[in-house]
Image 1 (cartoon, rainbow, N blue to C red):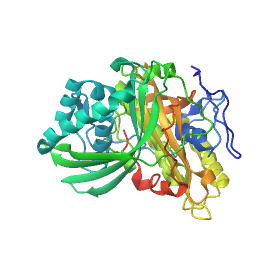
Image 2: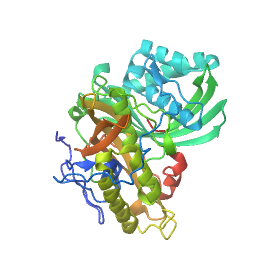
Image 3: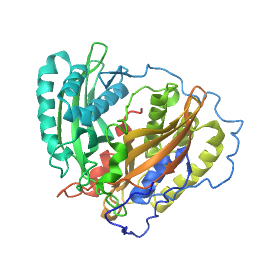
Image 4: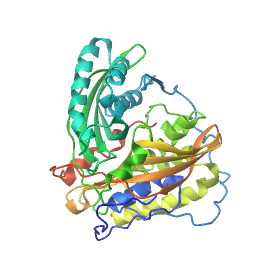
Length: 437
């Protein structure tokens, strides 16, 4: 599925490895591939035609995630039912922001008002409706692209959460700040959907046994440049991600053993969620800088049939990153620059699904680079499509492979200057990771 582009020639930068589109990779390599495309941090790892080695006898016996919290359900298209934890509050803030940026919410008043009735706290409902209608009116121009009228069926309205930061939390209320990237436009006409970065502050209260929205505000967010090697796509390339073609990711906040994902449901939604968590985890900075964390994450998420090879290949990948970027044990360069990486899912769609296996394509936005004094290493964002292959094993969905395909790249933010490299230090930290799906 090769994308047609408006610019055929990619820019090159010394020290950056080109992405290897179409190479099949172990599931654990998803984040690494994204970072390759974004900032040239690692070299892509391919499996070739060999057979994966069997898992070792020392593989953890309890590697299957254990359910410790109920997973969220949906009400009027809105994910609900969060754990009363900080991770649950982060998930609620992310999902409510994603819903509020979706095509149906922005183009259908009835859908929007029903969603607000689910998300908003009782005392905030009236104000929330007014704010939602105002936001929808402002978004209408972006969603129609250069067409004369807005066609909701062709609207592209996707939101990816790159970072979350807890400004305040207790079991009664929480304030979460999100750094997001949005893509809005139309899959028809000639104007490519446009990317933007937003900073969203979400206030939540615990009400009716769930996290509810008590207020929110947003402003322009930290602007990361789009990877210089990625060419902007034409509008028709976005057809797979119109409302009928793909779903928004749903984050959950439920965790199992070791803080990794709790067991997923044995259905297509569960497979989509597992694929979403995979690309998020493999884009975490700890993937590159913390061997113990990486091995535990792999035991929790990779299928037993690929686990040994996954550990070996990702250890090599991590070493390449550390060596190429001259990182110390603390993930910093000699002059104090910090490795920051993050991968967010913009949308998911099922390529195939059975009770025992699934193939899920994700449209992702991935940030990678060094937050520091060297502007040449400033974090960039790349937009990739990845197909995550999963198998049902050990009572959950586990990753077996990822196939990166051609990037799907929106137009860059208009007339917005990229933030200095030092500004990204707070975006890729361990505590600022979004909750998992």
